Structure formats: structure tokens, C-alpha cells
Image 1 (spheres, rainbow, N blue to C red):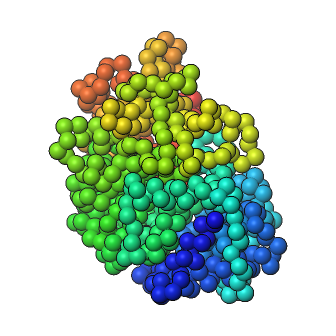
Image 2 (spheres, rainbow, N blue to C red):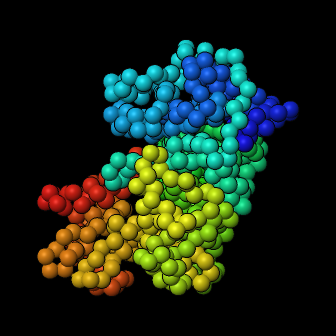
Image 3 (cartoon, rainbow, N blue to C red):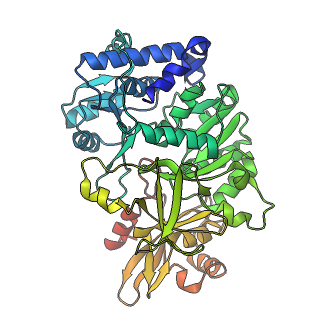
Length: 506
């Protein structure tokens, strides 16, 4: 089977007349045209010598043509290698070389930068050569096996070089079906809004919306703009979107200031980083029951756990705060285990490494056997995330294992401290890391961003923390920043914060 068959299925018969691709509020293709353009691009790829299994990169901002390129790559039986459009050309060139890409689909704002860094053949979305390519004589859909590669998903690279996660057609199929079972339903009346990069979770989630014949909306801005998202939600109605927690926070802040309750916004699926309790409570209070949380990794795309719409909204359960601070329960396509260092399953409530197995888990990293052996042990994917599972099966993340702070021989999980800090009105953002210390091994250092109009008072924050967490967990230093360093997907770069400490920058 091939994922591309879902597009052909959606375009069959009367379904072909359904609106499919939108630039803002303008419909640019129905499903019949979407499928025809993808098949034409597949024909053009074949004419360039691109064979099934060959990696083809997409280094472009979000547009309807991006989706045509993605599905055309699958139609041709090739492997998609989507890259975040915000990467530097040299970063993109390294990834394309590592992937062995034979061609790059670019946009006008990325192609020139990439051309300086590498000589890979390019085709530019929206240009004359692109229009010729999607009008090319179509080819029959290439048949691929369930274990053949569909996507090379490069990790966001918060530490070191990114690794290429091998995502198969089987993995994407199980991911989509688990979405319907555990996350949300999709109908042809719905619209997927792509405000997050299509190179990441938003792109992975396009497959179930194609399967169900839903609309696909790319903001004209090509990215995340809170006012634009709210306007498009009103215009289209029944909008679904994938969002990183930082995007949810920014959307809520803007909507509150504008008095906009998010009419037309049906589902916001959030993932990709820690969602702090104060932020999701604020978002639900303002927008209502539109939020669902999922937890996954590129290595198990979008498919480890889910916290349902009901659990995110419920305030009647005696432990609703604990559940809301969790990432939910195992999705239908996987088993989840909390393991100790010896690989044995830990009792409920004990913190260990989160492990997962099932048909959504990768077969390994692209051309990186050692990293594959390190991550895949005993039949399980070792996620590198620390957490615990309660008696009802809800998993609560603590931190990445590498972010654990050991002070005086005692484990301190930065997220606990960050949650306490974010409960203070003067703190807009917080990130906690460990700094080397001769006496204690490590001490807790908090980097904080002030709320608008507020001034950070370390003494007040210290008293606030002492009222909420154990004394040994409280920060020994507070560093105020205008903004936290983040990667292109909105994840805080704690490696950069540690480097600041090492360099003595305060």
C-alpha cells in the first residue's frame, strides 16, 4: 500500500468536486485537481529520473503547492524529506547530503540560500517550471510496501546534528488510525489549518485530513500569525490545527487582548514541548473545549499518548490538575512502559524512562546504526524522556533525561521548578537548567522572561518557590532575559542556556 492511495480515494467520483486546497480564504484546487497535480508532478519526477525509494527534499514555507509536492512525491513512490524553511542554507545542505536527496523542491525565499550551499537540482514552487511540472503527463501510482519509507523526518537538533528518522507507510497508516481512535474525528466538513511548519507535525497530520476529504488551509503569511489564524477560523469554520505549546500561549494572549473567543476554531492539537499547567488552564478558560494533547516523537510520530478533549476540559475530577499536567494515556497503536536503567518495568508512580513499542515506532535512524542501537533496545524505543505512569495509566513527563539536575545527590526535574515559576504573575516564560557547582555537583539556575509591564524580583520569586516546592529545588540564581532561545519548532534551547552559564554571561 501507499499513503498516496488516500488522495486518489478522496478524489474519486463526487468526492473530486469537494474543495481541497486554500490559500487563505481562496480555494485554489478541488480534490480532483489536487490529485491530478500530484500525479502530474509524479510524472515530472519520473521524467527527471527519480525512481521509487529516492529521497526528494521539500525546503519551502507553507503553501498549497507544498501539499501537492508532498503527495506527488508519494505518488511517485519516492521518499519525502521535508525541512523547516527557517533553516540556514548550510544547515539544509548538510541534511540533504545526509539524506542522499536527488532533488529539492524550494520556495522563492529558500532556493537562493540553498543554491549557495549545494548544487542539488531545484524546482521552485509557484514558478513557471513548477506549473509545467504539475501539468506533466501523469504516471500510474507507484506501489510501495508497508515497510517502505515514506518520510525521512529529521529531528529538530536541539543537541548536535539532527538524525533522520525513517518513517514507513505502515507507521503513517497506524498514526492516522490512532488519531481517529484517540485524538479527534475528521469529516469532509472540517478544515486543517497549517500555521505550524508542514515539515513537522502539521505535515504528518495532513494525511488523515486527506483521507477524510477535509479542506486544507495555508495562511497567506506562510506561518503563525495569531490574528490571521483567528480570522481564518471565523471564515472557514470547523478548523483543526496542530500547534506547539508556545503557539497556544501566543494565540491565547492575542485573543484575550482582542476579545476574540475563537469562533470557528474546533480543535487545537498541541504537542512538541512542555505545556505548562498555568498556560493550558488559561487557554481552556478563554477558548473552551477545543484542546487535545498528544505526545510523540519523530521516532514514534504523534503516536505515544493522548490527553482527550474531555480530560483537558474536565474540572470535576478530584485529580483534574494532575491529569491536565499529564500527557494522557497510551494511544491505541502502542504499548507504553516506564522503565528503570536495567530495562525492567517500574511500579506505577515511580519515575523512569518512557519506553514505547508498536507499529508506529521507527525501524531506526537513516544510515546511523549506532544511534539506532542506542534508541531501540529489547524491542522498545527508549525515548530519552523521564516520567511516571499513575494507577489509571496517565503518563506525566518530567524532563528529558539529559536535562535532569542532580544536586547534592538528589534528582531535580526542571519542569517542576518551571511550573512553580510560571504560576507567578511577573513571569511570562521560564526555563531551568543545572549549573556546575563544586560543593553540590549542580545547582538550579532559572532563566526567566518578565510578563509585559512586570519587573523580575528574585526575592519575590524565591519566596514564591519556597511556598510551592521543596527548598532544595528552588533556584539558586535567576537570570532575566528578553526572550528564551528557541529552535525553529519553538522548543527552548537549553544547550544555549547552559553555554551562557559556561561563558559567564548573566
